[in-house]
Image (cartoon, rainbow over all chains, first blue to last red; front, side, top):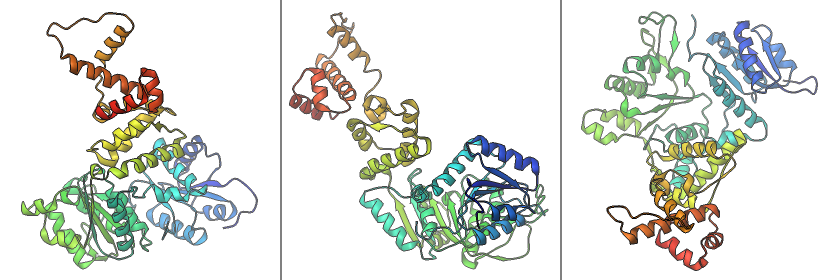
Length: 94
Length: 366
């Protein structure tokens, strides 16, 4: 992962559902974390590779496969970044 | 932290609650502000006692092996802390997954542990992976194993023997690489004798046993635990308290039937009630301080008498010696509390010699 400029690290919320992503963003911002970036399954990779990342929240709208894929990619790219998996316990939509 | 997880993963239930989200963000902050120690220490088994040191040594020896571990100890002694340490100090890269076998209804436990296929039962609208699959490559912590229903004990035994699971409603055997750590506060020998727990499962689980003594048998751990709990509160919430010598001594002497959990809960209450203050004997619950609120009625009357007001003799009289001793004990406790445990200052408040006060403190076991 590379940061293109000196900037405050951002929390990235990745979710397919904009309403859920927005709810999470609002809640995180409310708790004094001003830098929150929302991304979906197609844009997250470019966001993560272009910004300094504080943590990645994987929203409840992601399927288990999507969550696993993103985690695996993040792990390869920037293993030190904390990942927060948000969702009902392990329920996968099939 | 040795053998740190390669990816620091946290879980948050949806819908998200503010307090849980706050905890998660705090933990992330702590990992990123040079406080990676916090991640390690929030799961550290604290204590200076011989027992605590032995347990830490045993964990260090056993963690890197694949051995199944059975942890026993009263509620609140820190069984899950030990289980997490076994995982963190191992080289297992999968997740640490905890299941409380006593908290999940028997009819749901199988699905919880092994997962289910879509349509396996009414309400199974989607496929679901169980905890064994979730912990593949990692550690599965089976808490309150002594409460596991008999039918599930048979199934768990099979998994331990064959290392494969089948989802509920499924036909496929799924291979899993899971290290099992189980824990119980129950006497499993007694449960075996009563046919409530399978002996063959017990021996499968009890490859290595770690017994955590109750806190009352680890007096030397009270102060280190107290210090650590206050430190964490200060780190997380910016609020802490101090304890004077008398209150610490009282806490050290207390039995702590709820063990470390009771100690942590008490500290939390004290911080809320007296943020940034100094906790003295009178701030502690009566069962710890030995100072009963009802007893303080007498000294208050006496203080009025000191001020020149009169007190009346009760109809049925008093035992003067005991009565005066109670008054003296309470006044000394209050003087020590007001002087933050500094005996010389308390002696001045009571207009007695320091040596006299020391003698009385010993006599009243303060």
